[in-house]
Image (cartoon, rainbow, N blue to C red):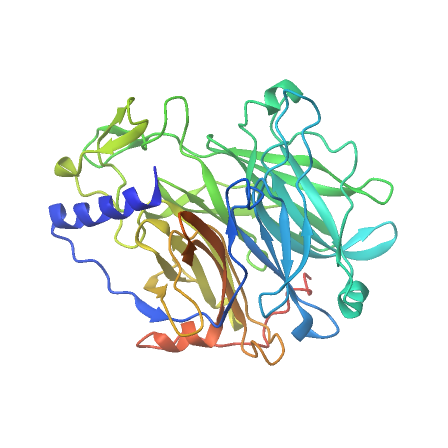
Amino acid sequence: MSASALSTLTAALLMVTGASAPQPVSVSARAETPAVYDDEAGGNADADDPAVWVDPRDPGRSLVIGTLKEAGLDVYDLAGRRLQHIAAPAAPGEDAAPGRFNNVDVVYGFELGGKKTDLALVSDRGRDRVRAYAIDPAAVAAGRPPLRDVTAANAAPVFSAGESEVDDQRTAYGLAAFSDDDNAYAVVSRRSETRVRLLRLEDRGGRVGYRTEDTLDLPGSFTLPNGSSWTPCADPGDHAQVEGMVVDQEKHVLYAAQEDVGLWRVRLDDEEFERPELIDRVREYGTPWTYDAEEEECVIDTAHDPGFGGDHLSADAEGAAIYHAADGKGYLLASSQGDNTFAVYERQGRGAYLGSFAVTDSAATDGVQHSDGATVVNVPLGRSFPKGLLVTHDGEAAPADGDREGTNFKFTPWESVARAFPKPLTIDTRSFDPRDTD
């Protein structure tokens, strides 16, 4: 379902149910990356998910790494300037799918070839792999391209039984990376399925491979409070997939956004998935629907919404991020793609909802619409972002280039978010170091 259709749906639901939409506070981005275009002239580039790498010597030289789907990866400085472009792998055969980079995350200090190495990990939806790129701080300092492909040649498909199954494209989709002691992991979701898999990274002769540690299948249908059964809206044969994910590595908790369902919390015990808990639902949860085969889209029956949905997220539930603060405090952020906002929850306790914000137009940048991926860091990043940084995907970068619709990433100072709330959110630049995983 398109993001614009979801926005219309959300408005309709509110009129039918009589619920009052929570008023998000407004914040402004300070910088943005160049717009990219999903057409032949633009190299079929479609921005999706960002990650931040913190430079250990000079945080002001930190990097933002963003996926462009079929076009691969871009690497940016903190002003949004493109420093490096990495193409997705070509198709291995005439009838095979090419690489398509969906989500990205960073792990620090992985032991690779006897050397501590920071890695950018990418879910390659096209080839059903996790790709690994070593990040070279010396190259950053010297102004050279900082990322280098270190994926093991024998890295197997994450979900597919063989190469022919890869081309069915029920492949690696969302990704969240984390470290635990001396080990590094990636949680990967499967496109068009409810499955999530935990992978442990391995050094294979100086290249990065992985093996499966555990697998979790989230529910695909739900029993509603009135006793009826409900299955989320999807194309025929598809199921309620997950994309946006983040791991709170201090608390050993995975947060996974099942797009048409809501936000799950899953504890990780000895690197195994525990029982999932649905902590918030999208507004559309439980609403009946039919499939319009001619238009190839779901039609939501808003007139018969039973009122079992949540109040804070409009489908799709998307990018998730953790803001760390002292004593287990801080925030979970989740993109509410259907109404162009971001929900904020307490990181501790039961995860109480605190409010929502929207990144709106300013003199520096346009606002953020239909956001997929997001990431946040609490540490100072030089003079540009001395109190931390929020990076969000913008699915409708403006101004448009004629009929070409652009996408990009927006950089927002964390203090702009924190101070926008009636009761300001915490700004804590010292209690958490993303490089300290002990």
